[in-house]
Structure formats: structure tokens, C-alpha cells
Image (cartoon, rainbow, N blue to C red):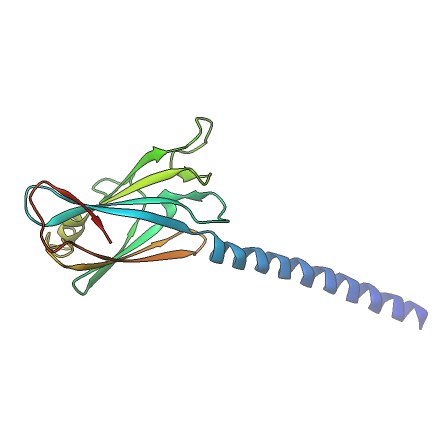
Length: 181
């Protein structure tokens, strides 16, 4: 009877350890989904050759408490005039509508130029709205005209997302840039 009780106790202790490890793993994944987000600090719309905004530059950094994020593995949902699409942040593919540029921070010892590791790091994510629509056969599909609304959702690889609702200015002049708010 003592032997059976000892075996049962051993099984219970083993099961408790396994459940604790699973709970810890689940907790870490959940925390990453909530806290590992990109902060979109500013969105600038650019006109290129016409009076419509054909490119947007998102200034992104780490949200408070976020771990390092590889921006090339993030995805972006763009919605304008009832049209929506999801694009990858990977600018290495040919014909990509996304271009990544380091703006501020980024210590020289980083292993990848697309990883935002510190709070002071800022990356410009440039999205070509004309090329985005051009891939679908309509280059003007996502282009912003005067007063148009735009929704951008930046989703980090761990799942945390940032939602930005923006509006183009009422008057757009050829060759100018605009802060979208």
C-alpha cells in the first residue's frame, strides 16, 4: 500500500510540474501578444506627381514594455475607401510595396537592421499605395484623395497590434507632404 501511494504521489508531482511549465509558457505567449506591439508615432502622406497621396511613411518604434520586434516580420492592414488588404513588412521581395529605413537609434552592433530593440529606435515603414493597388490591377484603389479616411493596423509578429485611424487633408497640392491625423 505504501508503494502504491508513493507511485501515485510521484505521478501527481510529475503532472503538477508539467502543468506549471505549460501555464508559464502560455502566460509568456499571452504577455507577448498584449505587450509586444509597434507604436505608430507619426504618419506622413506624400504626393508624387499628382494631387493624391500615393505613399505613406509610418514612423514606428516599440510600445512601452515591448520586447525587440523584427519589423520585416510585421504585417500591415491598409484600408481606404472600403478597400482593405494585408501586406507583409518584408521589403526583400522583388516588387515589394514596403520599404524599411532606419531613422533614429539602432546601435551598430545589432544583428539585423530591421529589428527595433530599444525605445529610442525609430524605423520608417514606407508603403507605396499606388503599387499596392497596381498589384491588384487598379493603381488608384488605395490612393488617398482630399478628405479620404485611411485605417492602418500594424501587427507585430507576436500578435500585438496598433490601430491608427487617419484622414487626408481637404486640400492636397502636387509635390507636398502631409502629416495625416
